[in-house]
Length: 130
Image (cartoon, rainbow, N blue to C red; front, side):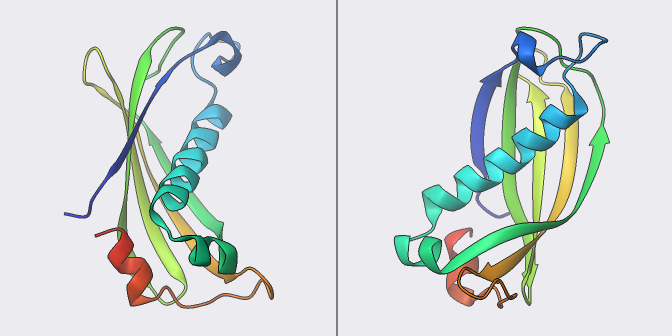
């Protein structure tokens, strides 16, 4: 199993929608934030300067609603990389009940930071996340 990256957040009033549940847009933001944090923490400076990631697609399966003051454990890992594409998984669990709140699969494309053209995910990058 690939190494996972973890983060814990607490739901605030600003995270809620009209039903007093976490807004779906906020979940997408959290999915993107944890991916970015994972990349920035693990990748060497040279790679951070030479490449950027962009989202090709998101698939999100919502299981349960989170509400104000819930503490959410977020876990992410790279499931697979091929060519310029990397598939990143994210799971969010309620810290208190351990129940799954959502799981997502995001396809990220690696781009050269100068040309903005896709580049192959190298073995060096794959090794960072194993």
